[in-house]
Image 1 (cartoon, rainbow, N blue to C red):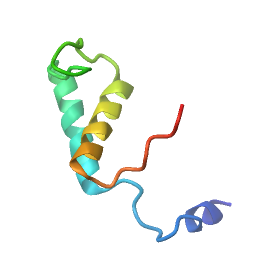
Image 2: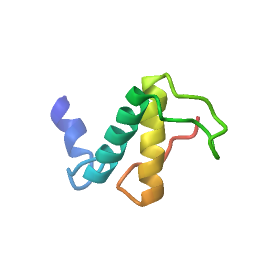
Image 3: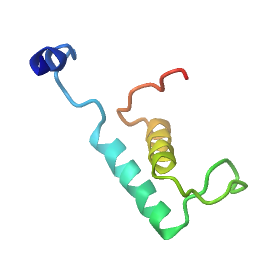
Image 4: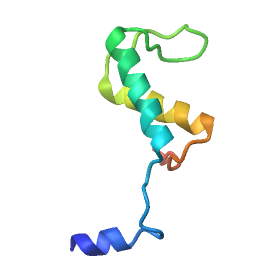
Length: 74
């Protein structure tokens, strides 16, 4: 069964690019230091959640033009 899910992806390449993982890694590091903020213009509070830090990192990578899949509509 696992082979069918793997072959369903077009090129069989990576879902996320290397640049995206570097940006997420950077966001996680900033979370640990306590310098990662949520929201625009520094008005948001300090990020406490690991999931939120990953989401912010992916969002930043998306803005930079890294290979990141589109956000799914919630």
